[in-house]
Image 1: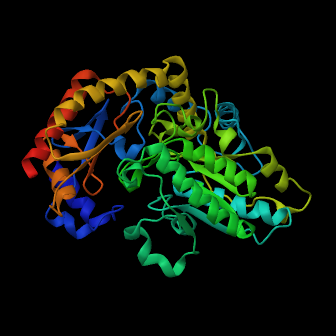
Image 2: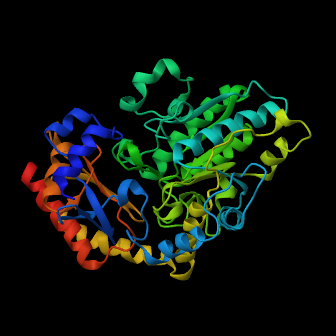
Image 3: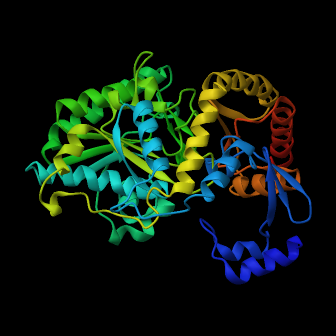
Amino acid sequence: MSNQNLLKRSMQSVWHPCTQMKQHESFPLTPIHKGKGVWLYDADGNKYLDTVSSWWVNLFGHNNPHIKDAIKQQLDTLEHVMLAGFTHEPVISLSERLATLTGLGHAFYASDGASATEIALKMSFHYWRNIGQPNKSKFISLQNSYHGETLGALSVTDVAIFKDTYAPLLRQSAQMPSPDFRLAEVGESAEDYALRCAEQLNSYIAQHHTELAAFIIEPLVQCAAGMAMYHPTYLAKAREICTQFQVHLIVDEIAVGFGRTGSMFATEQAKTEGCKVGDIADFVCLSKGITGGYLPLSAVLTTDTVYQAFYDDSTVRGFLHSHSYTGNPLACSAALATLDIFESEHIVQKNLDKSALILKEMQVLTHLPIQHSRHQGMIFAFDVVTDNAQFSKQCYQVAMQQGLLLRPIGNTVYFMPPYTINEAEIEFMVGQTNAVIQSIL
């Protein structure tokens, strides 16, 4: 099967996500035939280094033998059973392990990040209704936030290109100033700016808390906002404010969880060593890397207090949200295998060493017209100073020609590679990026 054959068939039959399909008349799709490690191979045998982990999901490389074997073993016993009225060992074990890791319990499952956001929003609203405070029905999020594209998730998203068209369908929410340190005043530290934003959050919640159900936030990195990074003190302050005014805090760890930010979960960095997600959050949304990038899965975990508000003789007080493939055993087995790798290979610590190696290699980029070079664990980003309105598109196109999968967000170039990337591959990734940017400036 050739590239030409596959892309012709795809254009005739597939509506691709986040895509203006007509643009593929001038810049064709790339038909991927296989993957191995950090590399993707097209049907003609060309290979591309996957610097974005296939939309931030792949943790331990394509074709990982441990995760594959776990899925194969599960396939021999149980591929799926509905989770309403039934249960199974993989979903029980995964829930137990996630509870231990996060300090939150009773995992509720879906298949993708947006669905996890929907679940958390609905749970928060329903909790307040169940305890006799139905007026607490509104939500707030950060400016430039992204939480998914289903209607509830889009209501708390603040990215115009995704949201504006559907505005008539959405519930209104308020957006708080983003603590993104790039927005700080000259001479203002990232921490001071985060504290200033927290003061503004406090002022808003103090005024509106009687109608607020929850504040939803991406901890440490607002990925779709161009890898906007901020000081962890903002999370600690947000927790204090939400506690004071009885507003839920939902942390969206969908993109930044599972080792991406230098800790197992980004929220852990809000306080001193030993902090768990449950010390900060009332709800945590998980997805993307949860299965190592192998199968669709998402989860929401919450506090015992929230869970008990639904535990009742009355059916309508229960949380009746459902998905057909909730808690799929194959996906759960992939997630368990992923957690095994974290534990047996001490991945979080190894990532700190690999992060330092990537930062050292990125010194070759300093001659370029860039600003706000930044990183958080295994997420690296910098903003290219350019008047080229087509920079993002051209960077992607030229990089593919050079064997590199880059997907800049506006003029922000970022790396979020699989954790298995080695020294030679890091050198290739950074060196080719340097060449690509130079060629289009």
